[in-house]
Length: 117
Ligand code: HEC
Image 1: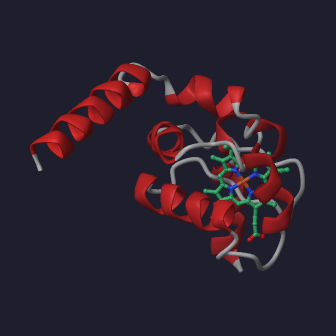
Image 2 (image 1 turned 45 degrees about the vertical axis):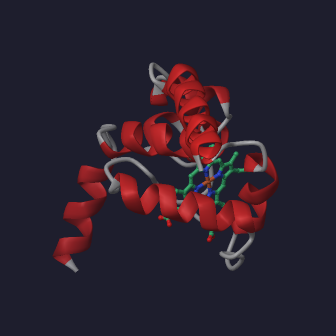
């Protein structure tokens, strides 16, 4: 019991050290997310690829993990699955927090178009 507490503290400490200052924006680029979802997750390279900017961080993280694990395997998710096999939960967390606040610079015109229909 005591030994496990120490192990957990050690793991927590390492995690904090590794990710405490990790910048979600840098991870987003370093992990190549932008190559499909575009800068800030605002301009995906294909219409079938989703925009991620402004989406809630909890949802983004959840869906990232579902795609990575293969539980979400419909649509185009196979395209992403292999690319994110080495991305950790903590990294997805940081990236999701960055994307939640990322600007969707090109979303306004489409939104107003949709409203007119
Ligand atoms: C090879 C292209 C590719 C790469 C690289 C990629 N993705 Fe994706 N991503 C996709 C596609 C395609 C989908 C849509 C899957 C579907 O159709 O269900 C998707 C879906 C998502 C979703 C779900 C969005 C929603 O609205 O449900 C999230 C979140 C996401 N990606 C985050 C990321 C993150 C974070 C990274 C980087 C670590 C990343 N993606 C890298 C192609 C990619």
